[in-house]
Image (cartoon, rainbow, N blue to C red; front, side, top):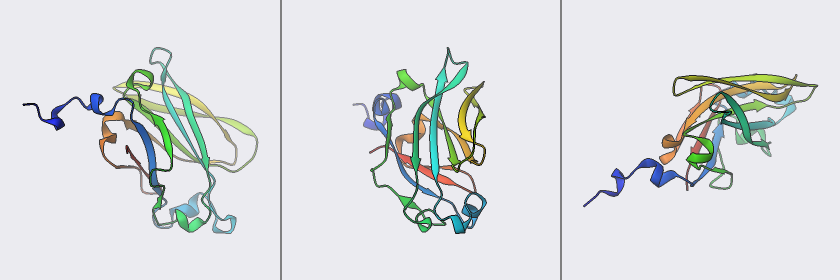
Length: 165
């Protein structure tokens, strides 16, 4: 008799919605991106996938978020509890790896930001538009099979959690 947990991960995950479950700027790291006098950070997440026969990255999701209060993400986990659906991860449409790009958005004239990533040993690059006063926070590859359970991504200055419900 086959064990439920031994089934193909893609069979279990394919088509399930990916959700942003929380984010945090640990310690005093938020100060590097948004001065406390300016209040809460204006955050933009862009998700990119391989396109053009796996030669470049293309944007397929973008969303802006500004917490009501700075304290929501400043050294405290801001939680969404399933209220921020991102996309249904269909392997055929997105492949098994996507790239999350986080930016603290301000203003200024538009410039192009190069995004580089390596997926399955292949170097890929793409371009997203940001303002010249924006602060890139992190660029993180996310594997579809990593999302079976809640996982923390990012680094020492910014972290976010993704999960499936």
